Length: 115
Image 1 (cartoon, rainbow, N blue to C red):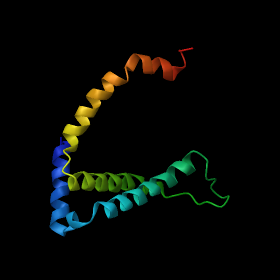
Image 2: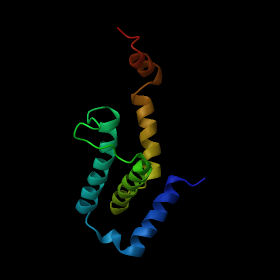
Image 3: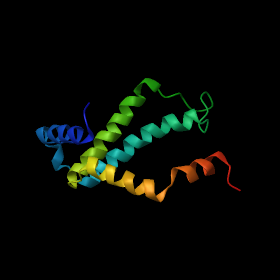
Image 4: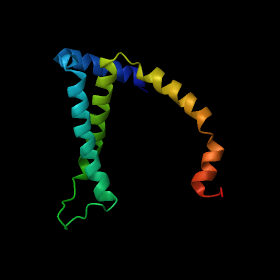
């Protein structure tokens, strides 16, 4: 199994081989937002905010996995730009969130059991 650190390194090598690591963070961030917008098209249709046939067309769902991959790649490119070790950062954040957001209390809250 490939870990997040290895994926980040492969993407770093991919970026450097093409000179993409020289793009300013602001441009990469703008591109990331653009790709997130593509995912939002799927969400707004799926949740019925945009009604198919009433002024909107259905997005081709076969492309959704690629949109997520593009968002992830751009996110990693930003992390690489700032020298962030995503694997270590994510694992550290999970530990903090586990303490901050106790599972039992949140399960009860989400199931509507609390008054």
